[in-house]
Length: 297
Ligand code: CAA
Image 1 (cartoon, rainbow, N blue to C red):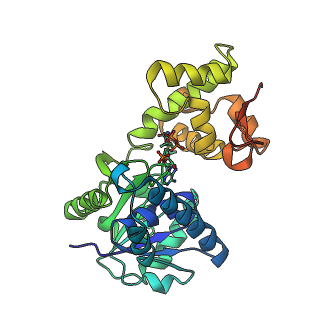
Image 2 (tube, protein in one colour; image 1 turned 30 degrees about the vertical axis):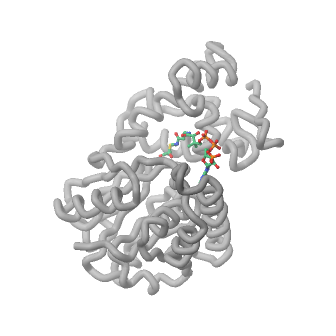
């Protein structure tokens, strides 16, 4: 089967990024949100990102002004689920909440054509739990993108025990057509990246709690000692402490291992509403976003 029309559920950070890369790759994209104001916010982010690609220019991996206009012409926003009826693939990137995701899939299942592939961008929820909300379990997969979607090359393509082989290969090829590098993985909580990344990030917090080093020093150590683009605390603030805290619950619930359990400090920061960069404060204070100041806890 050929994918031509893409639906994206949710136009937040991940959804808008997915909609953008699909439009840049020449697919017709319809993004669904519950209210126009969320579409406006998501599309403003896309506009900013496309402008950065134009600034960079095609010779350095960016795009031309004409390519930007073409990408924009492929993008539509809607608050009406009926507008997704003829999509070939729908990628869901709404809030990480099982009942809300299930409700969304169930309502779309009756609207969207039966050949359409349903994909979830969940980072930790069991894909198999979600497919039960539809009558198309064999056409249900995980497509896990990384933040910032326009820059990060990886997509985890997640197969469940119910996934049809041809559907899986179609989704894998689709990820390539988006200009991404797909990796094959199965529906084990956290897939490949979070299975390895989450214990590392949580260990960085434990190391800080145990006085191994300051936040800046641990960040610098991992950046300069291992060549990581961001130290663990910068990355935690970037991913969102609320998101990470949520993932720890799902992973700890699945594996019952301490390495996936939230350290006390992470819990307290989330309780205090310090979610990282998006809330203005996390392990760093972003009062001046250009000069984050590391906290002392
Ligand atoms: N769209 C387009 N261009 C963008 C952009 C965007 N959203 N954001 C930045 N750019 C451009 C910048 O303008 C800049 O362009 P020039 O080179 O022309 O100046 C270029 O990209 C590089 O940006 P920066 O200099 O600001 O930053 P950088 O070189 O440090 O790269 C980064 C930024 C790619 C985010 C890098 O820091 C990085 O790889 N960090 C790690 C990110 C990561 O690990 N993400 C995964 C998180 S885990 C997750 O998402 C999954 C989960 O389940 C939780």
